[in-house]
Image (cartoon, rainbow, N blue to C red; front, side, top):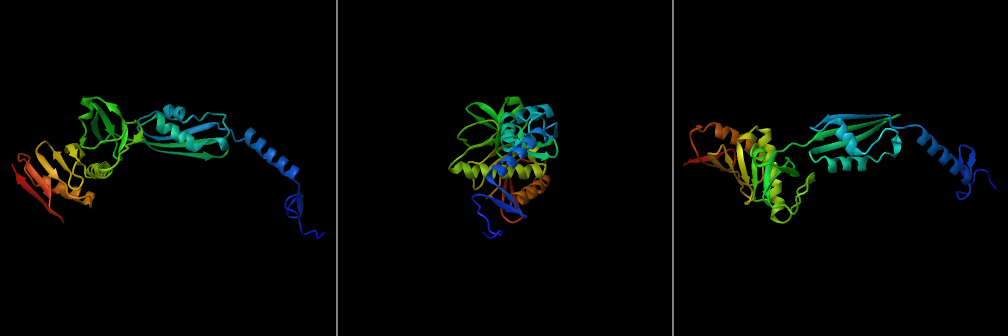
Length: 251
């Protein structure tokens, strides 16, 4: 038989060397033993931008010192953090040879609240349900009205269907835009019943009609300019009229 021809079912040729099936099994076992004996997790570093402590994040991850670095299930660990710590927005888990795990965590913050079955629920700017709070704490934030979740589960993005899908999408856009323009502290409630023209209460004196869901951040910047041009003693209705125009109808 030509020495350059080999049968893949019996031997593997690599650079002139032949490895039979048993040799390959032994090599695999040796590699697994090396991985299990070395590359043990000896340090867990948390890069933490949340209200949770490093210890809470490590405990929630389920990662323990002494675990094999390569066998750490990073997806499962991140899922456990989200499940146990609802005020968490992003989690990234990385391995660093020879023995280090780095957990990067960024927390969610309440951006609004909803009343569901008599309970006050905090939500973040992306629509995640953060948990039940008191009326006193909730009222420091805007109330989100006429949005009906299918279920309320802490740490899980709000589940909606039908017309509520568009309502939730617009609500999160509005909240993000108001935060960016530093208007959020002036907003008392946001009503998304009409997803084509939601309305909101500004400083308990201006009812604002925001128009269709387009150019939301730009319109928020225009709204900021519009309210600054109105006397703090005036109240009435402020409506988006298209382009760069807002119209004010005093009471």
